[in-house]
Structure formats: structure tokens, C-alpha cells
Image 1 (tube, rainbow, N blue to C red):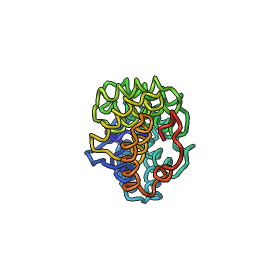
Image 2: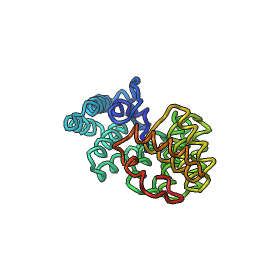
Image 3: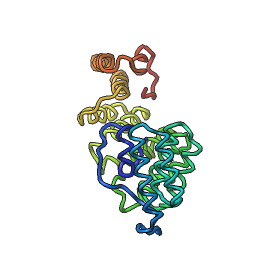
Image 4: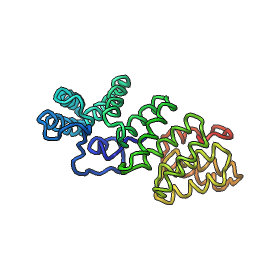
Length: 263
């Protein structure tokens, strides 16, 4: 799942491929006074926490983020970033506490609601996550609604709600036709619905935007097998072995393909 990049770009430089830095991303609860010294201090310590996380200095990052919350416990960015830190080190209980608090502080914000929804989906609370994705998408000022729609569709797949997933992913692609993650997930949901011809079309679109992954190559191979196109399936197999030889997907190539299973 994808956390909103507009909020935590500095951290995501070390976690996700293809992110770029931008200007200040400091946000705060609507009632907060940005000129308040405590709010300024919280923003400063949050920024330091992000920078230390980007450098992999997690203990120092945590120290600064705790200072941010000590200065202003209602600083939404501080809760989000410390939530990401706790998620990164595997402390899901504390991560949820802070993601939830950020969403409470910014109840109509696409960023905070998407981030909390993505976390809830990651820990398997699919129905709970849907509530927050809906709130994120409803934010008229949210700059990346396709992120939340893609997350919502991906989570719906995991929860077995394939029609919901397809609708959300189509909505994401209506906004961003070249959204690689949405294209891959659309291929996945159509494969699960045994709609192999349309699944093939979306895998081809995924590849057309210049994306490659072990998951997509394996899915493409399985789609072609279901369509009875052995030559194309062999080509996917060859590419998967060549490009991702040590991957779990490559090691699974000798396993039988089960209908309705994209992996």
C-alpha cells in the first residue's frame, strides 16, 4: 500500500522508488496557529525527524519526533511521521495510535485518512480501512486521489470484494491512466474474476508505461497460460528468470497454476 507522498517525501526517498523532494510539507490541525512557538517547535522537530529517518538514524529520529509531540501534541505531521517510524520498526500498536490521531486531527484531509487507511489494510483490517479511503477521496483539496483509490481497490482485492476493487481501480485510472500500480492491480482483479482477455490488456498497459516487476511478469505468464498461449507464457517465464532470478516468483514457476490465483 502507498502512503501519501505529499506528506512524507523525505522519508519515502529511502522507502519507495521514484520519489523526489519538494518544498515544506508541514501541516497542522485547522485550529492550530502556525505562529505559535509550540507549533513552530513541533514543525522543526518533525522536519529533523524526517531527515534522520531518511538517513536511517531511527533512534535520533524518534528522539526528535517525541520532542515534536512534547511541544505540540496536536501536530498532525508529527503523529504521521512517528507512525511511519513505528510501522517501519514493526511496532504496529504504536503506529496505529499515531496514524489514528493524525486522522482525528485532520478528519477531512486526504493525506491523513489515506495514510491511516493504508496502514489498516496492511494489518488486515480491510473493512475498517475502507472508511478512511472514502474520507480521503472526499477531500476536494486532496492532490492525489488516485493514490487513495488505488489503495482502496488493492485492499478490496485482499478482502475478497472484487467488484468494489474493480470500480475503485477504474476510478483511479480515470484520473491517472498511466498509474502503474492501478494498472497492475486491475490486471490482478480481472484475473481473479477469470476475465483473462481484459487482464492481459491491463498487463500490457502496465508494461507500456515502462514498468517491470516479478509480480507482473508472473501474472502475465499465468494469464497467457489461461488463454492457452504457451509461447507468450514462455516469454514471460524467460524474462522473469532473467530479470528476477532470486525472487520468490521465479522460484514458484514450477508450481501448478490454480485458476483464479494471480500469483
